[in-house]
Length: 620
Image (cartoon, rainbow, N blue to C red; front, side):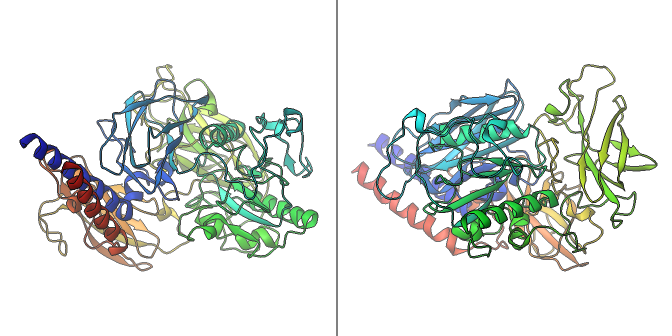
């Protein structure tokens, strides 16, 4: 009898924990896991510079808004990185951690998936079992494997009737790279044909700038879509890389897999990268606008916002959702001919912090930009180890690689330059790069340690701690610390990271020195020895999050006006003894001043009650 009661109590505790997970899904899920978009469980691009894994190798628990039958993963990591995952069902019970074996790999880019053994799962957790942490990782809860085709089921065609990687679609090769240029796989099945009548704009939510080549990223996305999502081919019809080059995905006359229940007659165009803090370049906007023109001329696609939409418009239109805030803000340009350069307030790319050298307003200037990284013997093929603080100079102009992602930029007259970089403990290096007027040119520089080993002298083994974890194959600026942009008014949020015992109005009470503090717009800092922090942000309402070892993550709602200041206390709750059952609401670690309320909590409480009734029935 005692054993039965103990089992019931253990199940109730597990259920309470699962309910707490659902509270997190509505409260701090993005802060904890970086997940922004529908189906996402983890996305390191959304972590505002924070590490995904703690010192014990554990990632935060990720809770899905919709139950799933498979977890799909894409990640960038060197050989030797070992990931494990576990699943939780509706009863709150966790599976054992199991290895996640790559099903496709090319260089540091890997894809895989984990299937739910039976039924559906509601939560997932990753563990780093060995090796360096991935510099980029995205995991999705997949509710359906395969494409949902409208109408009658379609037969899979014979091999000779499939289009293969050697054939070009109708778009001219002068505008779009054919599939053969990136070594595309032949389609795995036939999704049917259609006549294009509308367009949906996406982004791939991969790193920007990127640490792998365009071709590798394209092949990885296609393999993930075919092998892990069960689709016939890459879901999009076209992709535009960070250089503005267009690449053929599916043919535009083939039904895609990019908008649930809205794929027929719908052409999918995806910007490669993540565009919530990074701007698309003028080259990207211009070339996608040209492609939209071509679709209009060829198929009669109407060029208005009713027929050319962002992906988010089909699923709630939430900020941060696909195709990213910065691309979504340019939708009018995509139907009106692209970026014209006439709007002085619109930065089509480059360094949002500006450059102290040169006159950025001179139409004859261009921008040379890049990242400073540790050269491990493979040049720009592996830029996972960054060198923030490195000095970069050319022709009497100089700058410093910024904190975190080590991004730098220089505004210079159109010409060819020798770019030099140096950093303490490294050998100086130079590189020659050419920039045209009004354009951006990537010129990342790798430095070798003085000892000549090419290894890591003490940098961040998990990729980029302060921005986007990618590297530079010629892409757009990652965005980053908006506080560096002297052209925009900023606001100062300052205060203390405190424990739950402190007064949240005055911050009087115990503080948490050294805690990480960050905003949802990716600015971040660390509290000093007294728990004090200062954070310059764009004006508006902000959710300021904080985390520290031994504490549950916390957050506070902190609005700030242009050129204003806001005093803000961010509370953290000390984690309880693992042997004691935890209060689900305390375990969440949400500030009572946060913007979250009943819409997220009420369904979780209903779920908790229902599950406890089930547990009681099963025990009777």
